[in-house]
Image (cartoon, rainbow over all chains, first blue to last red; front, side, top):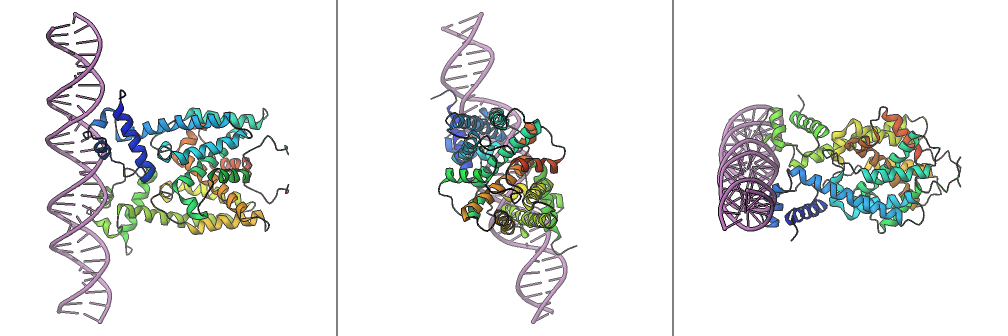
Length: 189
Length: 189
DNA sequence: TCCAACGACTGGACACTGTCAACTTCCACG
DNA sequence: CGTGGAAGTTGACAGTGTCCAGTCGTTGGA
């Protein structure tokens, strides 16, 4: 067993619960009981009930950054599209983490992931872009990715437009409807 | 006093709490105490602790639909841009409602608001658009609006790109960077 | 070798929460 | 009248987060 086996056990158990039933019914005591330890044991690994959310968030942002980096590295065509796909893909594969990462009470950073996005935007807009343009386009891309991910993970989108069979193809179709991907191939007006 | 004064009092109080501190610390008993009634009184107006979220959600979707309808009616230029602005504006003005409306355990409809969006998309794409195109563009617009609203309401965006002074102008700048607004003015390729 | 410190964990206690149940009040309507 | 139901009351219960005082086993000096 590792040096802090219980910590990871409880963390995984919490993520699984959140992925299935959301963060609301999550009970510290029940996690402890499921792990076969006393109700106070988790407090030696997380300061708070709040603390477990921070831990999940940190783990999540590390995984997201990894997914984004891999997507760019293996992207054959447009890096912006690859970034969008990886963001939505991560959210769908790791709902438990994604649901926690952007909680307003957490103010987690995810700095590396954000910097990656800014870099891609900066390259795609070229050297003449103003700071405001970069800011606006970065926000547009993040918003699109985050909104699509949220609406898919939380369910309202499929409740409206019906079930989606091929998620990757769907994300690509949605991206195509916006002007956010493959900017470099387009003639400047 | 109205016929169900306590109901609205508790509802407003709950919305205010959620807008400030999020839905997590919301306590039925504390709401009752704040309203000056016994801890069981709210149960005569909401079946559950859950029920209050449904009530807030319904109220919120009615307000959102109203805001969208008004925005389209008074839009001088592009209805898609007006829709986006009204969506984000609603989220910022009514964080308490917005934070609740899309909870995965709620499956609230918001059917009228969605239909309004689809109508605007259908008109903007013209009569030759396929169903998949309409589906994709509707999703793109909803995602952009929802993502931007969520990132603004929950805070991570301003933590990254710095404080935003003029929200309306910012939303317009972001919309411009996406290809989602003012489609009708563009020449077909 | 001993012993002190320490991290992981246990169990008890407390205030607080959601919710079930039985009771009172009061007003509308036959 | 009276009777039924809606609104509100108090009491009780299990479950929860968290503070506090312990109990182990290990480990690092002396």
